[in-house]
Image (spheres, helix red, strand yellow):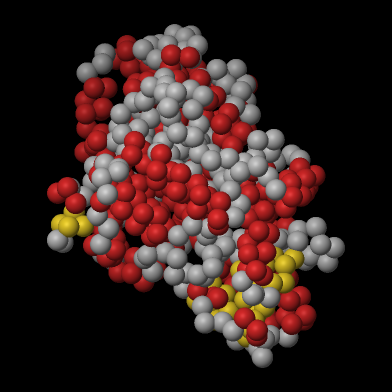
Amino acid sequence: MTILIPVLGDQLSFDLSSLAGADRADSVVLMMEVADETTYARHHKTKLAYILSAMRHHAEALRSEGWRVDYVRLDDGENGGNFTGEVARAVQRHDPERIVVTEAGEWRVAAMLDSWETLFGRPVEIRPDTRFLCAHREFDAWAEGRTELRMEYFYREMRRKTGLLMDGGKPSGGRWNFDKDNRKPARADLLMPRPLSFPPDAITQEVIALVEQRFADNPGRLDGFDYAVTAQDAERQAASFMANALPRFGDYEDAMLTGERFLWHSILSPYLNSGLLDPLDLCRRAEAEYRAGRAPLNSVEGYVRQIIGWREYMRGIYWREGPDYVDRNFFGHRRALPGWYWTGDTDMHCLSEVLGQTLATAHAHHIQRLMVTGNFALLIGADPKLVHLWYLEVYLDAYEWVELPNTLGMSQFGDGGLLGSKPYVSSGAYIDRMSDYCGHCRYDVTKRIGEDACPFNALYWDFLARNRDKLGRNPRLAMPYRTWDRQSEAEQRATREQAAGFLARLDDSGGAAY
């Protein structure tokens, strides 16, 4: 009467729906490290090491709680290389009466789960993932009939549903959103909080050696690996954020500083997305800091919005739009990303800084991703699917359900405005306002034309000009287009020639000199 319970690599939670109500004496938890999941993208070495180590630690934690765990390692000699093959072998080993599994987070894996009942000739129960606040049907009902799916309105529904930051049916502080208060540039601060560091234990060291050996050509490096890989250490990181960084998180949420990889950000998204931390619990704890007077409302609201707003919203978009969402390309962009997206070797300091920390740590915060690497990719006309694959590869918290809508929809406007009301593009002025990057750059952020002109400037205006037929009626771009129209024909021509020359040299050289 055995029940087989496959637990996937992003399901490292004790309250997983597939485990609920199971008799531990009659259940076998199956955990699988498989080649397909480690190679469908060229994942950052840190991402691979984190997931494999967290899985192995979670298996030990389950065993300590009395679960019987059948664990298949990547280097096991008989490993078939994919989930379906390993479930088939487990069915032979354990002859289960039925299989119970929590729904997959991605379309690709969901298709595998849907085939199991037919393949294995026994009942397969696929349970909803109750770690999320908004079920698929609930999101679809909210989205029904809307031509534009704006996160802000969805977020308000999640606030009402959870009661987070609500006072008598109204939002705390009288406003739903304090984003306008969260755009302050930061200065170097010797008292800036630092996330906790967790030196690799024996299990993690073994995994690091495996990754270095099997994935030597993948991006990134592992010499400074210090992420939490257990629920206990992830909780310690969360407690440190709440006490030390949350109070100033809001003010400097969008700020960027040379040499500062983390600022006041939580660095908790990898643990949320793999299951080591509970999203609603984190929001409740952040709210408690506000109620106790230890953190201001703009910080707590901004943090809660990232989780019950953006995170849940991205998941809803991903599942509603279907597996072909990845192929949308509103602008018809086809350019490849420059080779230095995998090396950081560029004279543009903002890009060098963000790419450098990405390759070192598999981390960059949302403004670095959106307004530096994403902004540049959109301005040069990079293929949004290739941009998506790059983000999926290099970031520790990148799972397709959350990364794809963020990248293709929000960052690259590949869905034509379903998700975002306008493309997130800017000249160098925005980066200069929100960072100290431009002061360290060989390019001059105040110039549009000339050898030392910031490339973002001409590229920005060229992007607007060449896409006017698609964007000219967008009300949020009316002011930039009026500014463009006030320029003389000679100025416009010089700007577009500057951009064309940059793009030609970028293509010819592979971007090495830029």
